[in-house]
Image 1 (tube, rainbow, N blue to C red):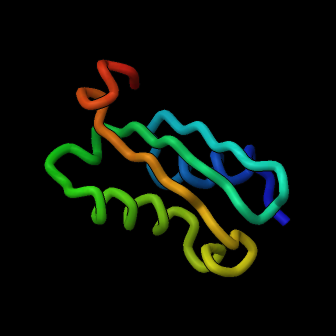
Image 2 (cartoon, helix red, strand yellow; image 1 turned 30 degrees about the vertical axis):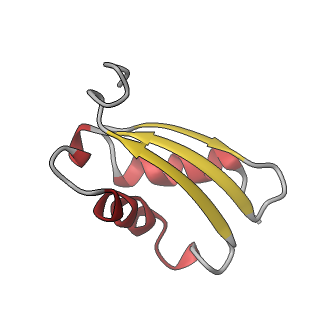
Length: 80
């Protein structure tokens, strides 16, 4: 079972330039907001794939569901 904090740490390890917030307390279903300059010029599907890649095989296994909101710092209004 994963915590929101553990998922945040995994995403930040894979996307070190990202600002990450993860919510969820049932150990299987989570929502994340990920802001990263690495997303610049990439579509939403590619952004989501980048985040899912940080979680690897945990997605669909230990982490049953992850709702994502991804954006660049510009899209987020300068938040990084």
